[in-house]
Image (tube, rainbow, N blue to C red):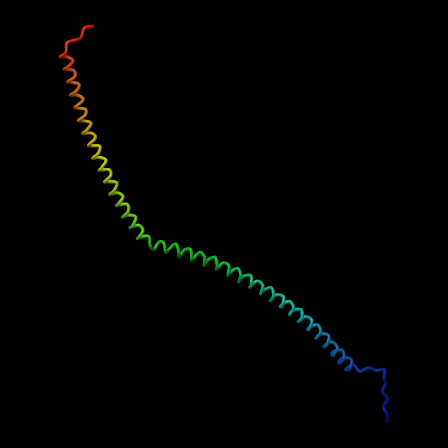
Length: 146
């Protein structure tokens, strides 16, 4: 007994196995392509994200530099304010000294004006006496003929 194999018949299990095997490779290829696309998208996002971080770091550094500059300016201005009490005291002493000098000058001018008044009063009295003497002399002298 010999079996004759009909070469034209196809076993359904073989077809299903081969189709499953081919489908597995197709799905592996599709999954591979999808994962590569996802990885490419993630890599693009990572590069953009790193760029955003670099830009943000540069912005933060420039902002920090501006803030540091402002803080140093404020510190130098505050250092001047620390000496404000001494400066005000020195100015007050200078104003007091100036007030004393002005008072002395005013007193000196007042004394000089008082002396001028006394001298003018004396001169005025001498002029009045001279006028009276002149009037007496004119009254005592006979009138000259004309």
